[in-house]
Image (cartoon, rainbow, N blue to C red; front, top):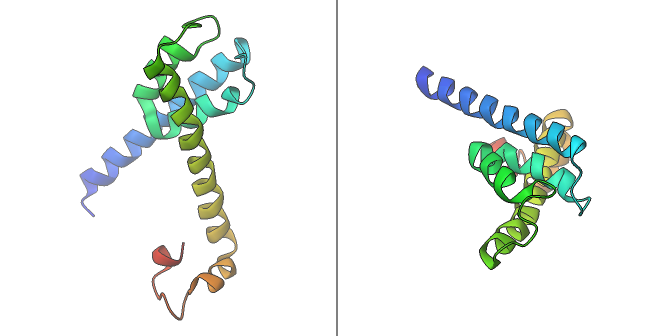
Length: 119
């Protein structure tokens, strides 16, 4: 991997984490009506970064955009799915790193010699 690509990746992750922290702090100060969104919004920022922060500020904050259009409603609904998948990936990757034996039923190391495919 080129060094510059690693640097861009780290910078991108840092920006996404900063967006998630900003949203998490704001959600604590201004709780959403649907309590699950207090988790969904910060997690969304982990994969949506600046775009997720923009969407949250325009359509997600408590008291803002209380009468959403159909497109905004569909977007918010899709964020539930994205946040769930993100949490699942984080838990699976962490588990595979901390307890590699959980990969054995998925074919590692015999059927799939590369950890990436078993994970």
